[in-house]
Image (cartoon, rainbow, N blue to C red; front, side, top):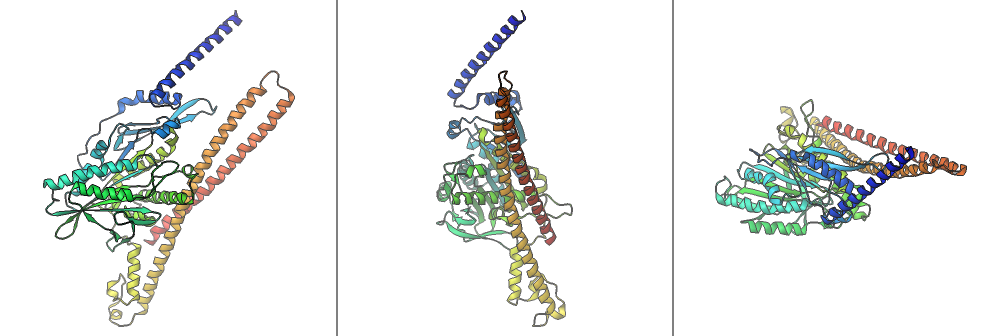
Length: 563
């Protein structure tokens, strides 16, 4: 009776397994017909989670006033390239939350599960939201803000992985800005009206460390900082636009001139940071009454995305990621220190220098649109993008504090040195000189010593700033190396684990021979040795990365001591 019962249970298990396989085949066929050919098990887990949490979705409310910083996340639809790779949708946007469903395997290498990470933002837009909705909640209020004529500085920038839809989103916003801006100016209900205000457009890009004018045959420009701390792009052409059509013609010209290239992650990847500036100036005085900057950042890339690139593409990717890292460092440095001072390394890259107004000016408003790819293969990079955006959101209260006025820029110090060299009167310098000495025609010993001290301090500051840049670049490179090594170790360990499972099954059979047991022991020793090598190699990478991080922190503290 016991044997018959065991046989009946075995038959029942086989029947249940066949039913599950048949159900899975039917579901796979249905998902493929719907254009979702990914792993059916992970798709089912994601759907179950969404059914459980769909009641958490909320409507997009319009803010009563323009926020200092607004963080939005936009998820694009899954692409044909992702469907070809049988990539499934792993991102859920239930406003105001965004959840990443990271597909994982348990230690046995067979059991599948999802690692859910949820972050909250001001707005979360799913793949069903069009550009009209994105513009309505991210940019429209900024147009009203700059049209108040009080010198407001508004910035919208798109950040995300290569191929996540940044340029598509930004071009949609540009066309809607043109329509609403000119309708607002022509209506006459704002301080900035068509009779009193000139609307001009400038469009340039940062590519390979150079700034190029996209509306003037890609002429190279210089970025300087004046004595008031204002950023000036010398040689940049501004073109007056009298209506929306003319405005869009300028934008179209700039977009066509922008540097793009085919990469492994995207066929038409933007290889530069493009900045479109819209200036509202007083017709009589030329005073800036409002400015809107639309910034389409170049796509961030992982080291695995550049493995088939040539040297030029890899250099571009390194420069792009370095500038984005500098932007992240500026955001991280915005927190006020205990002594009430703060150092924000804006001069670490031209990008951060040009975006300085986004974070310091009292009359500044900033919107960040983080675009994410839905594919499961991009889940790790999507999570990095969301954490980047979340880091900015954490600084909203701190950013509202007024910017310190006692920070002097390096260009100003160098200008003072030059003036001293050509014999400018000491009253024009920030050097204290006694009345008796200042009346003498010759330069006093005290003045010479103070001038030498200023030169020495400026030189030391430049050296430390260059050392910090190198440390920041080293952090990025070692971080990529560490992540790639870690992912490689996980892949190799999973293969070894699968092999160990097969070895155990073979050695546990009843007819196993002594030679097979000997082979099992030998191979097991090799696997253990290989695992040890992997762990030791990863520990070396971690120790080197910690050392570089510590060095960068020491350099940051050195900056504060020079202020």
